[in-house]
Image (cartoon, rainbow, N blue to C red; front, top):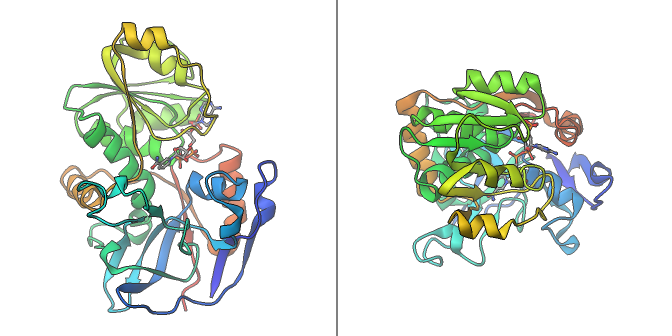
Length: 325
Ligand SMILES: NC(=O)c1ccc[n+]([C@@H]2O[C@H](COP(=O)([O-])OP(=O)(O)OC[C@H]3O[C@@H](n4cnc5c(N)ncnc54)[C@H](OP(=O)(O)O)[C@@H]3O)[C@@H](O)[C@H]2O)c1
């Protein structure tokens, strides 16, 4: 079958390790299901693997891709919950299982014609979502959902700053927070992306680091070094920053005196539970909010998609279509 794999890693030339070619299809195994992938989508995680961040070289080669929507061996339309974990190992929260793994970390991922996952990880795809929309949800959208509703516990009227507009998580956070009745501010390096954020429900979209018209209750942080100081400055006393990523770097100045003096709360967030994916689907049905899709590309052109991500050219999710047998 055709697949896109990481065969080597380089922090400076990550795409040199990306190979699109034939690999053996997954074999059926007890308790696991084989899914024919109709659509997948690109995540920063795929680029981290190629850069050698968070993925040991001894686990190469590996088929990349954390997101999938497709058809299982029994003909059911499914979304693949991407966190492979023991639901009982993390005190009722599978993201706290110390042995959890995201799809493509310990098992081949979704940039392929077929995928094998534990049957527990299959969630029925609602018929009001297209396969392309469904393929955007498992990583980026559920991460945004958990950051907003599980970690920050936002309620209608809360003021929320989302750092970045173009990212998969950021675009989801803007859309979901607005749909929940929050007052949403966003930042972006790009004027065109700032204009998009207003269409998704942001009250205002500002340049990176620009002063907000008011302090916010919650900041959604996935950018890291480039925006961290602004995130702390933008927060009201007692407010909360939820951090799930650091695309621009992981070592910002901590500003400890601001954190303790203003009693700011900093919460980490990783992944989501299967239950959160199902809850988010109910919210999306009720509110009509849908993923922002930049474009779709055939699997054979995935290198072009990675380059767009490296260059910061994407607005929302980039969908990948494997060839159908
Ligand atoms: N913890 C988890 O479970 C989890 C899940 C998903 C993602 N993540 C992490 O979250 C991060 C975001 O992932 P993603 O898939 O949404 O895609 P992404 O392509 O990394 O998103 C990039 C975002 O960062 C902004 N950005 C990048 N460089 C910047 C800079 N130098 N200055 C200011 N803004 C900058 C972009 O905003 P503009 O282009 O609009 O300026 C965009 O919103 C990644 O680091 C990823 O690893 C973590």
